[in-house]
Length: 427
Ligand code: AMP
Ligand code: GLY
Image 1 (cartoon, rainbow, N blue to C red):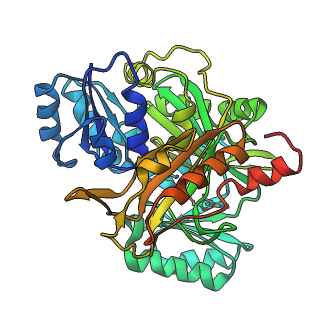
Image 2: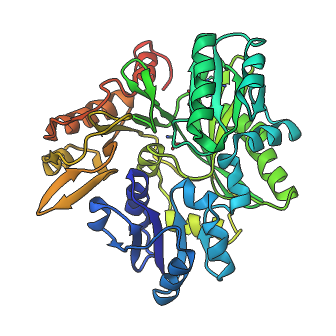
């Protein structure tokens, strides 16, 4: 079967690496892809907002499955445009992608379906938002309603900071000009993924992201600076609780409103004293979570995505390696505010020789035989190990083999799991 994968980041490179292992695959096309993906797939130039051009390409190349990586084309309706043209697609319709595209939609959905989440109110003007702020305790969370590429959330420690965030979201028109003010949840965060076919959801895997740019979880929020999988807190009991209290009610509720969810449902969770609460949904694979989940997967990813696309997932537990995978994101200096592009990267061959290590490209380009930085998050270095300590040691050994003075990374990815490991707790 020929497959078209949409996207160009580390997530899509990791998906590509898994897809090419499938005996079902003939040719993998990626649009637009990146220099890493170009080594294992055929990159094609397609405008992601030109649905007809994508449909025409799929017909000419006899594409049997389209896998959509990022959220923006999903929220824009690419999946159903392709399905209307008779193509098979892994990824939700625009109506189902509202679970990520509109935080106020998701909040109301959670209330309607008794899904545990933080209390929140939505606002379309600054004044009532600030009046509400003055009635809540601190810290408090201010969120742009629509897609904001990881930049729409401020966890404010003071009322001044919260008010500034309100002004900034309205003044900047971030996330569609409305916002949510949400109570702060205490606990430990985890990312949990469920593979969905419209009616069924299978637990996929868990991961822990590191969203802040600086060590010790300090500094600005980013798309994610590193991750590890599994998240120790998501043991069998917690996974079943999350499936029962959050994921299954979501599948049922979405199907009941005529907008069934098909694709990867990514729940951002806060696990607190009273159990799991939903922080947010994403409607796709995570980045960089995918880079740590897929190296552990011991199943045919293409067969799974195809079954989900066809509404035909078999109820079974998916096999994953018991090893831990850890990924370190290498970013260009200046990220997330103003990453500097164009610096030269070398040493990837040496890095890839470290046992258990694989590299994915996130924001690179090739020019005259050189590899150049071309984005904020530029490379991901992933390692498998018997535990988080071994995975981290291998990943940082590979990071140190890469020659890129203009890049940086966090040196403490996995710190929470490492601390627990050191304290003799289970990992
Ligand atoms: P989001 O884009 O909604 O995932 O938010 C980004 C980050 O902000 C999350 O990963 C959390 O670390 C934090 N966050 C968002 N909402 C809350 C909340 N209600 N309580 C505590 N932290 C939150
Ligand atoms: N790592 C968070 C995300 O993919 O949205």
